Image (tube, rainbow over the protein chains, first blue to last red):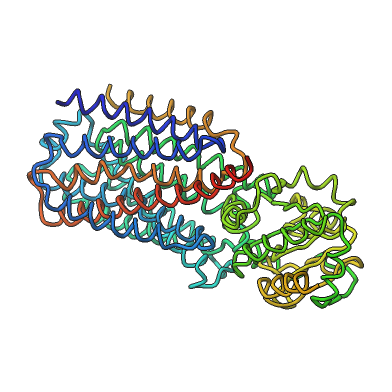
Length: 471
Length: 97
């Protein structure tokens, strides 16, 4: 029986590996997701028939409750709310790993080391170390993800929050966690160490909150990817606790993929991970340093925009988080179709960190049925930008700010951008005056060939669509 | 010895993960993330084992049941959401042909 279970875990691991590999390519991605879910099903089913499981009632309660909540949430969530949904699911995974670590520790205090460890062939030091890691990583993942969820859902301000001594608080938290962890690990008497255990549970939960606090909205893709990685590592740590290979392999694969995504996102902003996590970017940079850039904001009406677009041979849309907020993707697609019927070449320029999670814009535009051929990555669109008649910037800000390319004093200096300012005309849709998420004045808005179309992005685009239809 | 073996598996899985995912087109970043997020719900196995043991205290049962619930939300929600997103990509591919 034991052999059959372990053998099935190997098959589950293979399915996860294949599934992840297939997720990496557009043709096979959906099948890959299916295959990895079959792996999960196998892992769960063989665990249920394991001889260690005596009572089923609470397991069934948990499975049914979880399946109902998860199923409904996944069906009902809007595509525009995807970043916060993913963050929340991620947080739940982290908390589950924390609780697994806790439940195992509870067992140890009940049974004592000698009886607990008999089946696991570990040592008390090793097992308590990995319990500590599972709880620590799981705890940070949980509160970090929930806080990121609240930021993304707009339930708390998405801006970076810094207060004086914040770094000190974080260093203190980290030191206190290490200290309580060390005391916990070195303690010979498991039930006597319960105080230390609870201490680092609480401290880890706090660290998650304080860690995400100073990170602003524009840096969210990095944080989401990093938290995703952590939830995998928490599962792997839980796997070390219960000596289970499938947890270790699957958790580690997720950890690795999250790390890769994190670095892709950092690279797209030309910043280091440390800079993203600790600089309080956006809160400290709002002093407007290096923004000695002259120019004025030139508003344009919807009907004038229509004339520009009507005459254009080549139009590029540059979507950003504002398009997600306004839920304008369907209207944008409608306008794009009208422009194409009018004989213009229409493309969408996608910046890797546009939006609030990796690939956010691709998901939204896919929902609106925009053809994949029309989505162009930053590096491919920039060389042809000077030949573009109109660039329509929809709620994007930092990713089109030319200050990143030429203003060495700017906090986003060095970040690769989409060169919307090189188009013959740039139309920027914006809800109102004022700086973007990072708090920076956008030099693009002040340039001579830029026109500002103020108002809700969806309404503005809708007006353009009706202009086309009425003409 | 077991510990060494476990660490060995962990390290190999890390390298395998890096190799598998190093080149992913940007349109798949979100599905990859939410798909791998669903996989991180594998902790459900640990949660089930923790809940179903014979000699559980009340606290243990509570912790375990909560863990099973949360991990199931992570797994079911993660896979379904990923599938929904990928279905949109698929539809588009079909329309192109």
